Image (cartoon, rainbow, N blue to C red; front, side):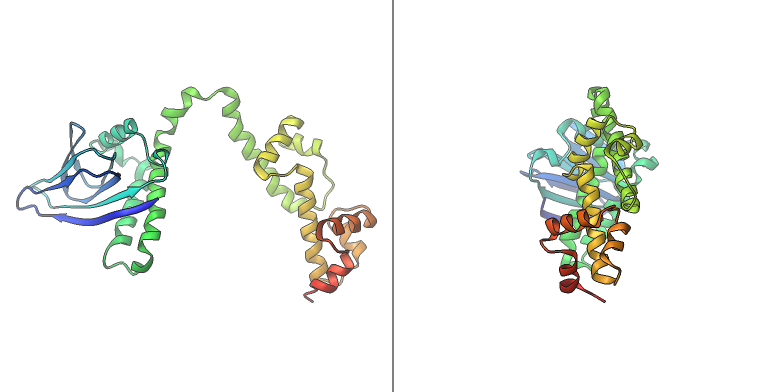
Amino acid sequence: MELRKYDIVHLSAEAELESGGIHPCYEILFISSGSAHLRWMGKDYRVQAPALFLLAPNTPHTLISERSSPCSFLYLELGVESAAAFPGLPQQRDWNMLQTSEERLKPGLASVYTTAHSLLETLSPQSPFAAVAEQIAQLDIRKILLLIGCYFLPASEADRLTGSRLEQPEASERIRTLMRNLESTYFEPHTVNQLAASAHLDVSYFIRQFRSITGKSPLKYLQDLRMNAAAWFLSTTQKPVQEIASATGFQSVHYFSRLFKMTYGVSPSEWRKRETRV
C-alpha cells in the first residue's frame, strides 16, 4: 500500500469553508474534532467527531465545516495493490452512513477511531517519529481497513458459508492448540491416531489440515521438534548421546543417530565437536 499524499487540515468555525476534490485513488478521511458536512455520491453526511469516511477513486467529494464548531481532519490518498485491499463501494456507502449515527461509537468499533487518532499523531509535524512516520502510518492504515473489514464480515460472509466451511476455523484452532502442546511434550510417545483423537478430528482430515497449516505431516513436525532439541542439547551439554536420544523421545539411539545424520548431514558426535557452546 502506497501513501500517495496526506495532510492535516483545520477549518475555521468563523465561516463555512469547503475542502475536497476528485482523486484517481482511494482516500480515507478522518474527522478528528468538531463537526462537518460531507457531500459524496449524491448524499449528505453531517457528523460529529470522531468520524472516518472511505472514498472510492474518481468520486467527487466536498467537506464543509459547520459554523457552530471548528473542524480538524486528516485525509490520506492511497495507492493500493488491488481493489480487494479496500472495502467495495457498497461497503463504503454503508460504512459512511454509519458515521452519521451513534452506532459508530459502540465498543466494537472504538479501535477504528483509536487507531485513526494514533495515525494522526504519527503524521503530525510534531511527531518524534517523523523519519519513519509513513512506514508506521501504513501499518495503522492496514489495521483500520482490517477492522472495518471485520465489521462487515458477519453480514457479508455468514449467509454463503456452508457447514463444512464453518467447521474449518474451529478445526484449525484445535490443530494450532495441538501444535503448542507438542512443543511441550515432544519427548513423549505420540502416534498420528492419538494426535487426531486429541484434536477430535478424523485421521485423514487431521493430516490434510495439519499439512495445510504447517507444510508438514504431523510426525514430520514432531520429528523436527525433537531434532532441534537434540541439536541444542548436543551443543550446550555434555550429556551422552544415548541420554539425549532418550530425552528427546527416541527409544533407539541407533535410529536417533541415523535420523540425526539424515537431518543435519553429520553424526551427533561430529555435530557436538563442530557446534559445541559449552
